Length: 141
Image 1: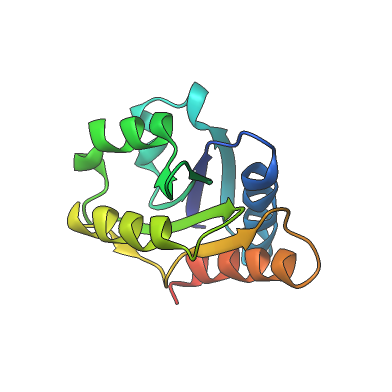
Image 2: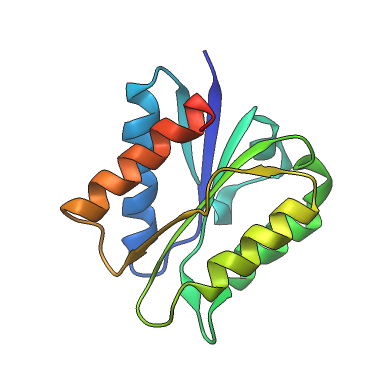
């Protein structure tokens, strides 16, 4: 059984909800899943064979500072890992996700797809998109 740790930061609850939906999809694919708020995470949270990292778009389309600090200070633990990226946004075109994907890839991680982004609150089709992304993380597609 694959171990997936979902580590996220959420200000309004939208990114946390995305993490819960990704967890639901991953569980349906048979993974052992843990949802971890980055404010309580230590470097051991990055020891799972699969990771999902979540951050909303902040400011001028940037990853939230606490998440960015956690990842950059533990970047050596990402090499060779399958990593999913997800987050919510209010405006913009997803630039923060494209840049984050490039950064995480530069650490030697295999980023799954283009990440999973949702405008504001995940519901309906976007909720299903999150569940599907959770399945794809576990199944490696």
